[in-house]
Image (tube, rainbow, N blue to C red; front, side, top):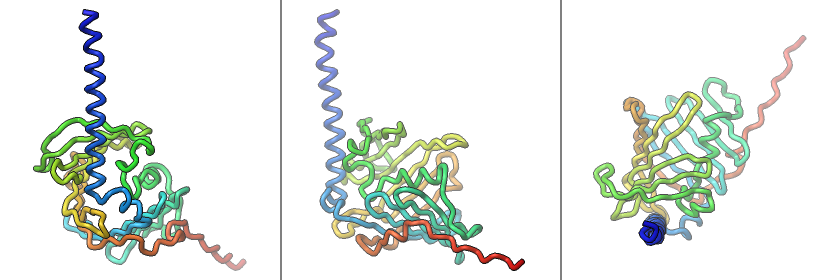
Length: 247
């Protein structure tokens, strides 16, 4: 038995190493399919503009990223706009109700602060603290995919489903823990198009598992790379002092 076990250990280790190499190989092919590290990292700012549809209602959205970790999102409907932004240090928002800017806290702040940036989680994933495991092959949204399990340094788990032919992402599933509980979010991507040599998904469907009425379909109208993105767009506006009421 001891002799058999000694033979089994190196076989097991070799299998584990082979699996890790296969996962890295898939990641490398995915990055190359997107456009390659050089082209991706030449993008210093990224603006996407489109329409989000939920329950028949259409909302105009824009999402601006700037390296290394600045984010600004705007959602507009019926002449009303909500802004959320992160300047690399603090997050803030302007809502139609309060109008004056206010600091973000809790889950809203975490969502912006933990944004994976222009490159996404897979580029230099080890430096970002991710661990990747190849779960295997499976059908996803009608496509043959590789299922890659990503675990962040904070312990958050997501699964990226990569098309076995194009090596572009078909779906991403993440388990999110909020104060109110746990939920599973799904992001299905398609209609991939090149912009300055970098591939972007022009269609995204966001799902909350168990809540089909909250499904959001997003169609991108425009992707602009390396356009104007002044730091002031991400910084919280100063609230003007209100004049004192006469005594």
